[in-house]
Length: 270
Ligand code: ATP
Image (cartoon, rainbow, N blue to C red; front, side, top):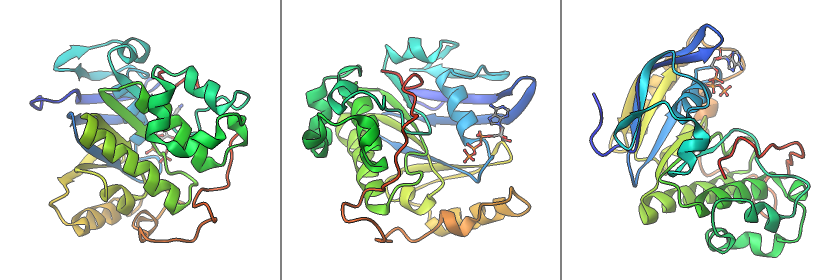
């Protein structure tokens, strides 16, 4: 059943690659002014869900609703109406300056700099020379300056130092609270994301197995998350997802040093 006031919604969506579904019967919704987190272990289906919601992957079954109406429109079309995707990876154009990266976005660069004033002193620098945290600031600044109605963000925190993650998440929170953006945040660092999320869904094996809101104790999510790991994919533990959120082992600037020079901006709606 559709959620009243939702700007973007998945109703029983099954989606995947080729003929093989990777997520089944997923229903979720995001509404203006809220941050919703989508959790799950590696391979649980978080990115697939986000890509299907965005219209990058087709729905095998079920349907998407955009501003209350069913849609089959692509991301590039819905981007004009305010649906923006920040995909996994650093979606900057490495060879362009920070300023030019901002100029090619949908929004006003000055608005982007208002959201992240930290970028002001970096405007002439090639985006590829920024730290990982600075690159993600640039990506998020460009997206938020485009005045999105709904913003889908995939693993923004990957490889970043804790202070950088907090800064990015705080900007997402402000976008929701101050500007009424509906934010869907795919995240493995559950505790950090819970600090800014109003509600959450938990995916396991391609299905939503639990959901809750911030009034539910984080412990409830932790129990469900850990249970979903049992027999789950290798290389990921629930305890990592619940690492303390106040770890300050970071660089002086609080920004991760990892850079990605191969980032592709094409998947970001600009
Ligand atoms: P992670 O946190 O590791 O990014 P995820 O929860 O985002 O994982 P997905 O990337 O959505 O999970 O993957 C869900 C399933 O779909 C996995 O079994 C994965 O191997 C498979 N998959 C993902 N991308 C493709 C692809 N391009 N072609 C085929 N299978 C894919």
